[in-house]
Image (cartoon, rainbow, N blue to C red):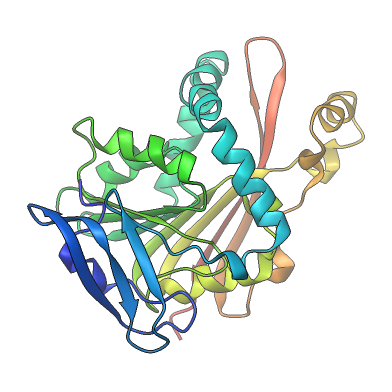
Length: 283
């Protein structure tokens, strides 16, 4: 695992001013930094490294909505990991894992690529991404929840995948340099972001020109919302009324496509979602 290798500063930066970071180590295990801090050379903010994961979350820059959901995921990390890792795959008869592989395939990632998983949660995407980028590739995965990251980290310690960097960060203030990632994926979360527009701008900023991005979250197709099944689903979860934030995308994107689908379980249709796919313009 490469939660924080010494070479990580080549793509990390201050999330506030995007300044270069200087690494100060306190404890090292091999080429992994166990503890220490990263200091911004420009604005002099220090970002603590704890248990190999750098923390770029600044409370003063967190809005109330993001803080509320951060605390919620901290509290339910264990049950969320169980639900997403075992319960939903089982009751969906394997259709949820199939859809997740489809989302990863939309990234067009190749061996050797550097891919970013925004709001990785408990790390459900990491194994699939690792297969795409291979041993010579790299995966950066961030989340605002310490609780969720602890489960993501546990997955990387079980032997696979080994080429993962974990960071605690706010999606509206990403700690990565411009034009870093070959592809970016985000599954679940943007519906509840406090500042969706800024999060989308940040995603596009850190993607390389020509890089593909995929965003998936809860949402029921408008054409289905007045149906019997649609009304039932909307009563079970108000977030199903959310729409993909296409109107918030900057102009420098291309190839935008939106897809709607419903994952079924053994008894009922569950988890309708939208799937946004787009590319950062090369120009």
